[in-house]
Image 1 (cartoon, rainbow, N blue to C red):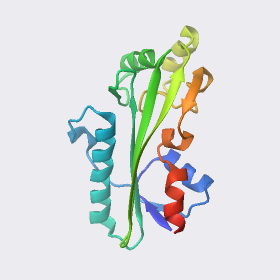
Image 2: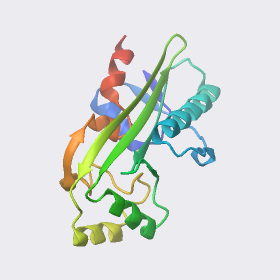
Image 3: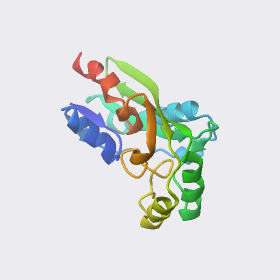
Length: 183
């Protein structure tokens, strides 16, 4: 049994799909306080901040699992959650026809063990169809999603190449984490 210190339904679903017992107990950490533009450094510091908040709230009686994920655009810039539809369009146009990296950092900490993994999954997209892009923007499904889309949603038909684990792109590299849970 572990404590997933995240409100993410995607992370919870991944744990369920892999048959990992957990309880979900989100923690608060102000990611906006981080003034870091490098995706790898950002997810490390954001997830480390979440781990510290989780440890302060729950202790280590049950192993703690925290993670953070960001989308790095074609030039390495962090593509956060879109503020509004215009911002979503800007972000999606950066993705269209380009390669991005989805970077995740996970920490698993118990009283006797500490595990850290920082991984990335790279996606190359075909150019988005203009009419489909407009429908997606109008749907509002981009709201609350880093990079304004999920690779298992709108972006899926445009994927031309994937390098890395799909679970990493969904926010938690379970295949890498699993051996640490079983030992």
